[in-house]
Image (cartoon, rainbow, N blue to C red):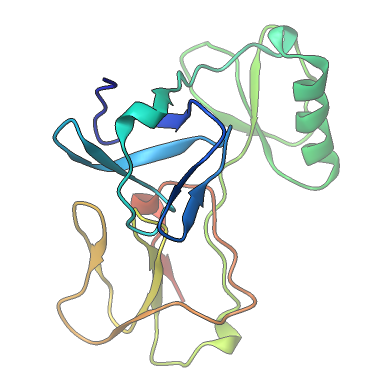
Length: 184
């Protein structure tokens, strides 16, 4: 039996599990947000559905040096840069990830596509709403007052919070939920 904890990265160990109306996509990596004993887990973006851990395997998230990447992985990074994505690098000097305007693609450095914040065109949103935040399960909300970070979701003590639905300009970011708070 696979033992997981909140924050672990997992993916299916076979070609698909259907639970209710939600299908978990094979080869996609998911973050565990809740665990109930050894028998159930919930994943970011899985709409609160509980899954059996026996259908998943842990994923090691290790970065590889550019020289260790496959041709396809290198092309993916380079294409992202050509398409205007921000590229970050880590030279393993202890200074961490930094942005780079014109990557030199050195074989002894790590590169990644920079994590992005969520986005919304605020001109499409009622002026009463001043904040946007995404919960650990992937659900986003608009708030009239600044929410506070909870264990797995944002909480508001005053004002109004509404589920974000129907905004074509909304783009979900790639940063973790607990860094997703945006102010107008």
